[in-house]
Amino acid sequence: MKILLSNDDSVFAKGIAVMHGALAKQHEVTVIAPDRNCSGASNALSLHQPLRIQQMENGFYAVNGTPSDCVHLGVNSFMQEDPELVVSGINHGANLGDDVIYSGTVAAATEGRYMGLPAIAVSLCNYDGGYFETAARVVVEVIEKLMTHPLPANQILNINVPNVPYEQLAGVKVTRQGRRHRAESMVEARDAFGRPIYWYGPAGAEQDAGPGTDFHAVANGYCSVTPLSVDMTARESIEEMEKWLEM
Image 1 (cartoon, helix red, strand yellow):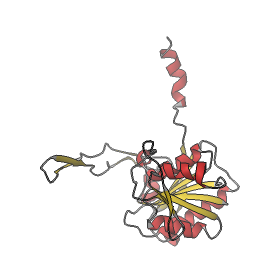
Image 2: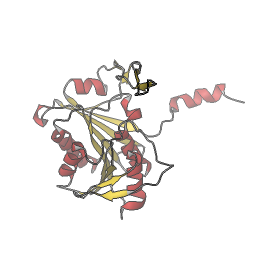
Image 3: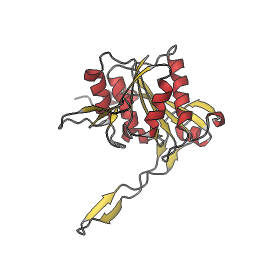
Image 4: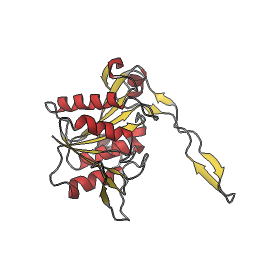
């Protein structure tokens, strides 16, 4: 299978190297990833600057753009043939609940689906790294199952893996997104000239994190696999809204 592999932690991140090593044993893998850390970039596109692509010594390709840029450029222009699958990760840190809105990792997978391709986002639930091999093995196994059970055309998979050896995983659970409380206050500081500057503070605490959620699965040692719809239409509201919005 031809696979396009990207991420948001940069082409230099350990997670993408481990993921490439696992996939390349069975598949033809092209790595196209940002030349810097783009965590939190979401689905941003670089519309006001040209994109440049450069091959690294290890054969990976670095792009001066966002995760979405990397996938769009790879599929639309750079690769000779369309890949059959887009994989994004392994991310350094979880992408659970509301995190998916901001995640460049999830965005790269979403861009793949917008380009008409099945796509997977995968994250290791530890920002300092660790058992990337566990996450890579899970993805390889999920891909094998996707060959006989393809994803619906409007969905991607968001996979979050506990930071433990593969043998210590409690199993795999199909989950829904949980939710966080409102984010904590921003952190105010001063620059060298005494002017105020602001940093984002910690993410909000878990609010909806009960059984069935991605939060709950990971907290209990399970790998969380969440199908995400890239069509954000609130279909359940259409009929009711048609009634009160008649003009």
